[in-house]
Image (tube, one colour):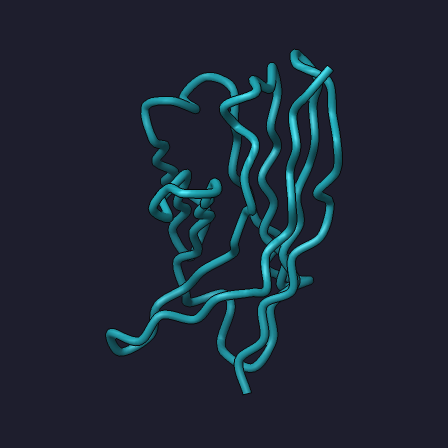
Length: 116
């Protein structure tokens, strides 16, 4: 079955960096676009970044452009989110996501807290 397992969340000071990882299994990872979403308390889940199956194309939400980088390792079925220059408003639970046949699959999320 499909599994997405995120890791790497932590408490970090403003201006700091984190790298999130998502380990995927149960589907043909190399043929599947992947996404990172985030959800802060009291807010809707929002799309942060996307990457095509071969990694050639990435897209970002405006609030994270220039600070976050999504990447993937198809050989090891991993997708990453490098987050630099973190701001308090980046604090949220971050989720790995993919969609197959109009069905969304989610990991359990990893918590990122940005605070001094």
